[in-house]
Length: 68
Image (cartoon, rainbow, N blue to C red; front, side, top):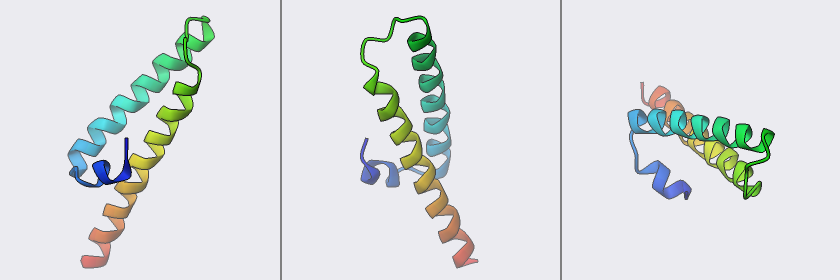
């Protein structure tokens, strides 16, 4: 997922996506624990996506507070 795609979404969609990514990370960690994870690099990719979403959410928050 690219940062540009994330910036095109509104705050509600970002919160929904963040919840989805956190759930996916939980499931991947669970699969890793029981040795059923095929691609362990997928965990780091999901972590990076979570960081991107959180970064864009923070940018929006700062932008909104600067405009007020």
